[in-house]
Each structure stands twice: as structure tokens, then as C-alpha cells.
Length: 505
Image 1: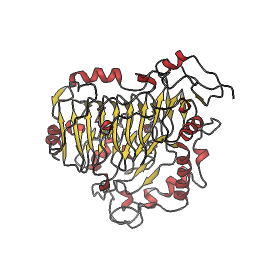
Image 2 (image 1 turned 180 degrees about the vertical axis):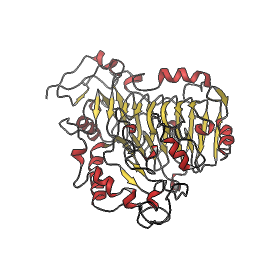
Image 3 (image 1 turned 45 degrees about the vertical axis):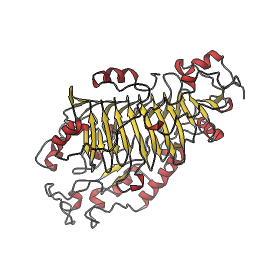
Image 4 (image 1 turned 90 degrees about the horizontal axis):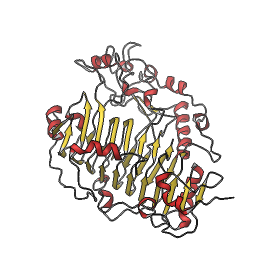
């Protein structure tokens, strides 16, 4: 294979200017043997600044900064990316992303779509019809809900199809890895980077992540199901086509695949990156069932989270990143019953920009989470008005909002301890309970934040607005702030807009 080695000056400037050393076959190119320190330490061998958030609690996160030249790669295809990760293993490695890497592509670079992953006899229309509430919900309820354990050839084929897709698009990242975007246009799309249990010391910077699209979302007929007599014909037992559980509200489409999944990993730094659904937002896929299964939340969901931190993951800092045009941003802790997460899930979020995101920024269980100097912009309008759920549902169908409806920014879940500091919330049609919501939590703390142009304590404001009070005694005080002091809320907007996101290093 012929390889073109660019000048050393290009290598030193590559992360800033986008110049890269790329092999002529457009896969990967190891750096020439010019010495470990031939690239500038600050841009091409970055390390987490001292004391920069929870990720630094057990020492500096270095990622692949100690990589030998043999383990420094520039890649521009899925195959080259996967090969580099495999070749280096757990040795320190720097993988530089040039252009766009499509994780849903084969070794020849052809994009793989639903037709490539589909296992017969799966077909969306047949699946939709098989589990339609008018068909499935007429069975006897189980614990006051429709049977959530779908059976039959369509569900079996959907699961097989989903596994085939997952095996292709979910990429495991090993320990001691730096994944760095070159220039202003580096992207990883249509898949998931997974940092699993046993993996630690990972740095991800300067990359736009987009569209981890699930071609095979599943219908859960019992999700949010409720026997609500305000809905005409809604009752617990089937009588006829107009009376029975099929006339009750509830059921949701659920999808897999986060853009980044920190699934048990630890000591992770994500910085100056961008996360979105790309050009296929879920707003393109409206509900497919008739009333009462046509609330906006019952759209056919093809995207899960942006970054999820689960299963005893720990010591994570996410900084200077841009999250936009998505519903559920990320979970920290994925189950109320997962008491083993106690003592883990310590995360810092600072300098991030959230725009047109609906909820989970983040939603926290068990973790100690420090959230400071972030900027949240959204609109809470859209659920309709009325005296009961039925009237609100009917009203919401009149003017369907095009934005993601802000449910809550910070979600205080079970045994969580969120410490909010000098954040800025601009939530149109919202109140402080949209800034922080009580989701079976007991405590949360805030100081120095701004809500819709006014300096307020969002916890105290939410307690008054929601009637679900949170104590401010979180039991801990942050000490890990890194080299930059906390900005006052009045300076956050300008700072975040200037710095947050890929291409701004």
C-alpha cells in the first residue's frame, strides 16, 4: 500500500487547520517515526486539566497521550477506525478522525440501511398492525396494563434485525484512548461509541456525533398506560370496539443506541463535541396509531440518548459541548432499582450548551452530579390545556409544536445529589420546575443561577411551582473546578456560545 506522509508542520497544525496524514486508500495512516513529541502537547496529545471535574478525582485523565508513534492513527472510514482500536488494544493510542466516519457502513464504505439489517418476516407495517392497541390491548390486562411481553413472528424478527444492526454500529472503545477530531468538520455518525465496564482513561474531543438511528424501534403497549375514565370508552376490560383498554391512553415507541454510552466505564473526559439527531430528527416520524395513542410523546422514536452514563460508570467530565435538537439528552443511572450504583455515577457538566432539547440534561439517579456554567435554551409549550388529561390531549392536537417540549432540564431522581451552580435557563413558557424536576428525588442544591433573565434559586422556585419539594441538603460540596474559576451567570451565555461544540478548539 502506498502512503503519503505529509510535512511535520502539517502534523503539528492538523487539529487546528484540518490538515491530516491520510493513506491513499482512504483508510488509516500511522504517523511517520519522527519521535513521540513531534506533535504539540496541548492540541495533539491533550490531557484533562488538573482537577477538572469528577473525571480528575483519581488523577489526571491522559487518554492516549503517551502513545508511541506506532499507535497514532488518522482514520477516515469505519473499517480503519475499528482496525486501529483493535490493533492498539489497551495500549495508549491516539485516533484522529478525518472527515466523516459512518458507523453504519461496511468494509467497502457502502452505507448499510434497514434493508441490510432486516430479518424476515419483519416489516414495519405488519409489525405496527400486529401490536396495534385495537388488536393487542383487548387481551386481559396484567397488573392493570396491557401485556408488555410482545410475542409472535414480527417481534421475533424485529429483535433479530435489531441485533444485526447493533453488532455493526456499536463500537467498543478500549482503555487509554484519545479520539480527536481533525479541524472543524470531523464527524462520527449513525452509530454508538461504547465505553464498557473495565474500561478507563478515555478522552473524546472535537467531534460532531449525529444520528444513532434505530431502524427497529419497539412498541411498548404498557409504557405510561393508564385507565383514565375521562377518555370515552376507556375501561379495564374489553367489551367491544368502542369500550375497553384499547380506548385508554398509553403506549410508547422505544429505541436503542446512544451516540456515546458510558456503560460502566470510568475516568472519561468528553470535551468540545457536538451531539444531535442530524438530518433525521424524530419529529419526522409522527404517531402511527389513532386517538388515544397519538400524543406527541407517542411518535415513532428512532433515537435514544445523546450520552448515557449507566451501570456503575464513574468519574466523568463533559465540558464545552453542544447538545441540540433532540428529546432525551442523557441519563445518569438507568434504573431506580439499581442500588449497586450507590457511590458511583459521579459526573461534572460545565460550559455546555443545550438548545431545543426536551429533557434529561441530565436525569440523575444515585449520582453526585456537579452542573455549572451551562446554558439551557428551550420551550415548554405544547402539552395542551384542560381540566384533565383527555382535554389536554385533545387541545394539544390542535397546534402540534415543532420544537422538543421542555419537560425538565435537571431531573432529580432516586438517591441523586445534584449540585447546580451559576447556570442559565431560558425556557419560554416555563417556570422553575422546568429547570429542575423532582423525579422521586429527595435533595438538590442551586446557587447563582439565572432563570428567564432573573437571578433565582431554581430549587426554591421549583419547590413553590411544583409542590414536590426537594431538600437542599445534598451532603457534599464540589471542589474539582479545574484551572478556570466559576463564571457568574451574567457571563455564561457569551462564554458558552463562543466555546461550546466541535470545531471551536
